[in-house]
Length: 157
Length: 157
DNA sequence: TCAGGACTCATACTAAAGTACCAAAATGCG
DNA sequence: CGCATTTTGGTACTTTAGTATGAGTCCTGA
Image (cartoon, rainbow over the protein chains, first blue to last red):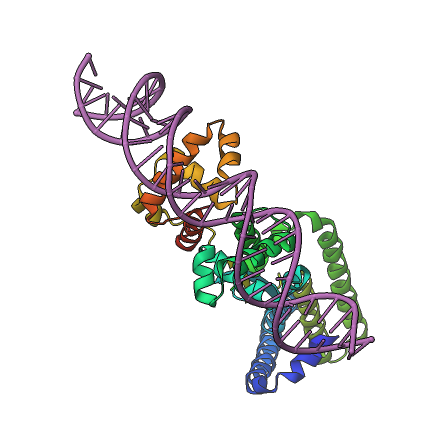
């Protein structure tokens, strides 16, 4: 019976149990004295003893039984910028060169070919070449589709 | 004492408790008979009664008492896409008409003017008109800029 | 060293996007 | 109804995007 084990483990409550024991002994003696004086029915006396200690046992058990721990997992929604990290996996699949990726980044920011050429100090022809190669590698047919796919695959910063 | 309330509520266990009660009465009578025959010390008899019913009370309590539940809340972070809801505020500022907004939605999905016309059962001319008006209202100069701005302001689903 | 990939640039062309201007039909509201 | 707005569509034009092809340079790994 692990109950008595628990009882002895609760050393911090020894004082309480000692006091309780004293009350028990006193009650027992008082009941016995009353029995000797009154000499009434033994049934009533024993019944009182039984009921009293039954209730006492219940009370003691209630005090000692460990509450069972129920773990409740509550999902808390936390808003996180889901596109904080780019999808390196999808990016590698496309096998883009350094320049092509640079062009793609500017392209997705809404820049025209002429603007991209200006920012990268390249000719418009070069940008057109890169963009065309990009479309082949990304399997799209226009810059708007490229933007949509890039944002959907989360491969741009 | 809510314990007795629980006892009576457990109607399905009435048979068990009846049987238990019978055992109790029988035990009481047996102890009483033994006392009358042996006429030994009243202390031992009462002590046995007390210990027996104390333990019985503990056992009964353990069987009946509902374990008090200690709830442990564990917060679990769940990543939620931050752009779940569109920015109604920014959308209203643009003052787009119903058709213009429809066109914008398809535009941001990478569709060409011809494809948009096909899906909305309109002519290419109409789409061009809507797109041009869109650019004026959105203060952009190309569809790529419109896409970038729409996604940045979070005004598309 | 040399083959291949990446990067650059050019020309010529087609397709699509975008602008400007106009106008008719539909819609919604006081 | 009358008026403003939206929606639709057209023509004509310019600009940009996109394709095809070729070619020179640079760098790296076999």
